[in-house]
Structures are given as C-alpha cells and as structure tokens.
Length: 222
Image (spheres, rainbow, N blue to C red):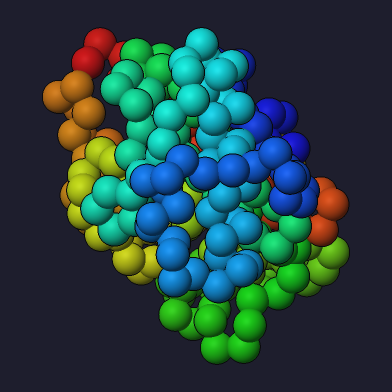
C-alpha cells in the first residue's frame, strides 16, 4: 500500500501482522518494559519494518530509540517515519539528501469516535466533510482528515521540534487524484532558507485501512 503513495527514493516496509522474526535491541526493549502486550507488538513490528527499510537503503540494523515527544531517532543521514494501527505497521525511510522530511500515518477505515471530529477539524473542513459524505458515503472522510493531519505533524516535527495542533493546519482532500494539501495556519518551518506554508501528500484506502504519506522535497534553489 505505502509504496504506491511514496516516491521511489523512499524505502518502505509494511506488515499486516506481527511476524515471529520481529525482535528488539536491548536498548529498545528497555523503552517498553511496562507496556501492555498490544503496545509491545506494535512497537516491535514497527521497528522490524524500520530495519527492513534501512537494509534497503544499504544500512546495517540499528536500534531505533525515542527522542523528543517520542519521535524516532534515526541513524545519521537518514530520515523517516513510523506508523501502526490495528492490523498494520509500517516504516518509510530515505537518505536526508533525497528529501527534507517524511510523515506517514495509518488508521482503520472507520468513522471517528463520537466527539472527536469537533476537536480535530476546523470549520471549513467540517463544511467540506458534509459535502464529501453526501457525494461519496463509502469513504470515511472524517478519519481521512484525521489521518492526513497526523502525517502533517510527523512531517512538521523533525523540521521544527515544536508541537502542531490539529487546528494549526487546514486540510483539503482531492478525491479525484487521491492527494491532499495541508495549509499551515501558523508560521511554517524554514528549510534551506525557504519558509514553507504547507505540505502536499497522498492517500490510499484499501484492506480496511487508510494510509497517508507526505514526502517533502528539498526546496528548489534552497
């Protein structure tokens, strides 16, 4: 799924279960000593995916620890993103010389729980969602907006080291091209002397899942 919405420069790996071969380095295992079984399996398989992606890039296996706000810490010269939800774990990695940042997210293809939409969607997004549901009720558009915003945050944070709230980005979905545009409502990150005002990503709905991905290129001329 993920490779269809990522450029070829990105190494992706995904699992729809938890293979026995998925194991942790001791330093990784120390991070989840008190975690429940579900969390341990998600954490372990996501890092198994990350090591497969590292191998595709020609890098040896390495522990993937946690930095600020739990963001994964990658080997020098590598950028990437992890995601997991029920029935899916994935990693997307590339060389830092090829892209500026990556953000991926996966969610079950199901409506958001009651009360969540009001906390994650801006007024203009809620107006669009009402029209989108009427036009095509087969897609859980509310969950797609949430999933896109999660990918936005994962792209934003490595560039800024700062929090980004759901209200700080306005997402526009294009059903025809299966793309989305996130317009930042706060000052954007500066990459190679260029201040960004938003991100563009892609999405796919398949196998009961929604997957979103942003592959941020280095600014031209930056």
